[in-house]
Length: 191
Image (cartoon, rainbow, N blue to C red; front, side, top):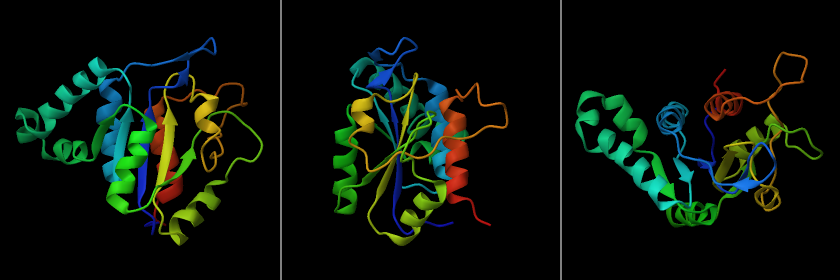
C-alpha cells in the first residue's frame, strides 16, 4: 500500500522503562541506526527520527551517520548512504513533531506501538485506513528498553495493537529492529 499521508518513524530512547519499571534513557546502538534506516528506506517513509536527550549519544550517532553520508562509507556503499539520508537526530519527541510540521505544514498524528495488550488498541487495518485516506502526516513511535513511558502513550493519537507471535503468548519482547520491520510490512506491504 502506498500511503496518501506522509509517514515518519521515531525511535525513542527517552522516556522509556527499564526492566524494573524505572524511567531511563537507553543508549543509541549502531545496529538500530543502520537497520531501521534501511527498513525506513525500503518502505518509503518520509523520515526516521532517533530521539535521545543525551548529547554525547547524539554526537556518537552523528559520527556514524557522517561515515555513511559524507565519508568513505558512502563512497563504498551507496545503498547505505541512501538509507542514512532519512535519519535525523533530535533530543525530544516534541522536536521531531516540530520538524515534521516545518516540512509538511501541519503537525503529525502520533501513533505509538507497544508489546503490551491493552484496551482501545488500534487494529492494523484501522491505521492502514488512516494512512490511505488522510493527508495529515503520521509519526509512528517505537520505544527502546522495555517500552515507552506512560507519559508518552498518554499524549498519542492512539496505540497500535501488539504483534502477536506464534508462541503461547508468554514471551513478547522482540528486538525493536524486528518490530519495526514487521509493523511496517503489516501496514505498508503491497499485495
